[in-house]
Image 1 (cartoon, rainbow, N blue to C red):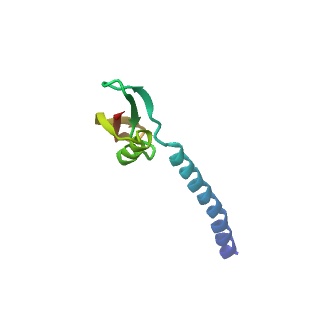
Image 2: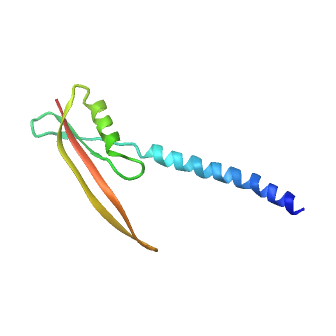
Length: 104
């Protein structure tokens, strides 16, 4: 009887793990990089992007810059820093990166 219960739990836990995996993938896909349009220093179209947090990376920002500026771009600003957020167990430390590019 104990063996049947253990096996039953395995089958109940698997759908829960699958659900958690699906939710995680959905959150990461929602964390796409959204360029914000502005006028650059040379008067051309420019974009600023948040490149960290929720699965975002600086490499993904450079890729997005190439997509929104197919003719090339100049980097207007690139910044990074450390961010600390209090949690119930202490402090959570992360990086914050952003990129601003002006299309050629």
